[in-house]
Length: 187
Image (cartoon, rainbow, N blue to C red; front, side, top):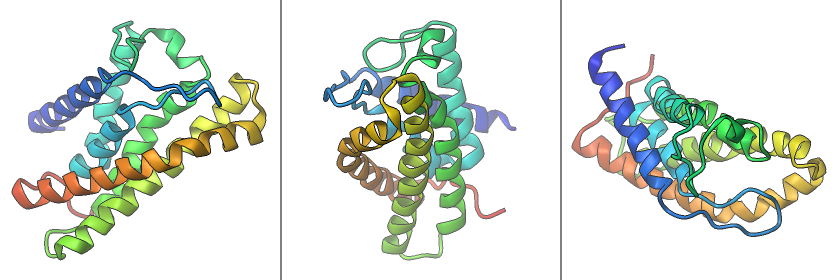
């Protein structure tokens, strides 16, 4: 991994941390708040690709593990990795990786802007929503004592917001692709 890759990953880790400054919104159905940090995970994937996007999220998770309050609501520390929201937190790494790998596979510079945007949106939905929810819901069902159906149906309240985040990530991915493409091409 080059110095440039590390710097880009650190930059996106800082973006994810900065999105954590926005206060979380609790909806009361399940003990998981709405945060803007999942947008940062999607952005890391669509802009940087799978490997660098996952490394950016790993940087954030290391900061959380050493106790820095970088999660939404000023949370941090090892307790974040065992609470009811831990599945979503741990799921950020595979979500960023899958979003990035799908972006690398679905999007290239020769495509029209619409095709690129749709590719980024699909990658964000599959990686940033489907993969993240699969891990988050599974852990929430166990640690949150809500049962699988309670965790699943409680999480459905987050879908509209996450679809909007995926749309924003697609727009940003497209804008970066036009101005300063960072996304690795298919490998």
